[in-house]
Length: 416
Image (tube, rainbow, N blue to C red):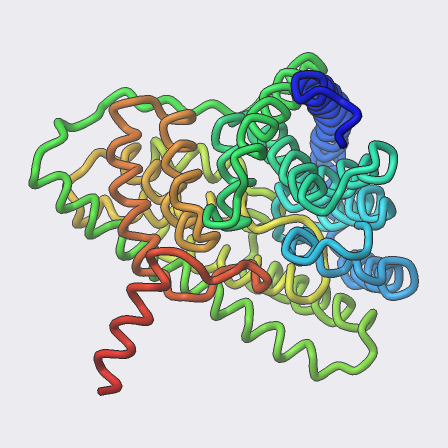
């Protein structure tokens, strides 16, 4: 016989999850604010002291040693969060949060080509999962708390709370998401976002002054560009796997980022430019007003895949924004759409293709670029999603959903 009334249980659950969303949102929003301000500091230091890039091999070795002797499971990064959500056995080590925080700053200090969302998401997942024990959560509730941590981290680092909440749900596969996870994901995302803003963190703003009418012809061009963005996302995944196979030849794991650092240093000298290292925010912003070089996206693609698969830390998403925005900007040569629209479509669509999170991508387009441009971004993202192949940047991501059903059906037809 139950000892508590259903209404009392419901009220207790409401209070518990309200408290969890508040604590997780506040803590992750604050941690992300500290990370972003620290990232600005090390980026400015690198820009003012160009000699620091010569430390790339040594910094790479240090990062390799830290993860080899301390990191253990944490080296899996975002894939560890996905694996834990799918099979919630062992807790996510709290060490993951400070370790990825420090090593990402070291990566950017030395000039690695990496992003920042991976750090915020991993910190979010690691911090949030610590509440599993404190609040005595069962496996189902633990899955929700991991989603909350991911949504809070993504929302705070980019200033896109709705996209952050949907990203956390979508990356785990909508088919297996319980309704009880949706509202906490949204609540934590908004709390983390506004907490980050309260710490006076400013996010990059993009202004699109000219938007073409949304007619059949322009929809066709948006779809065509979306296919190119999807193929670029596929290329990013393939190049990353290629680098990974090459580095796996090196048996001593800490030596991999050391060798990677040497290769990055050689590439920087060969290019004669530091344009493609770090986050590349100035180049992303410039893509909306100035036509990018025809090979800018490809150089960033190769260097980012090299950086991350060698063992440096950070994330893929901001570099994907760079790759997409610069490719979109370069397409102005033969695609009759405004430069800023092309950059905006590429910015989001390459991300959609690489992460397979098309719904979050479309919402991000509306959040960042407004309603009119958002329709173009949405069309490009859908085409990029379906043209980017089966595999994405997260190897542990479950291959479920309409896209995979379609591919499997086509494969089955051609095998008859």
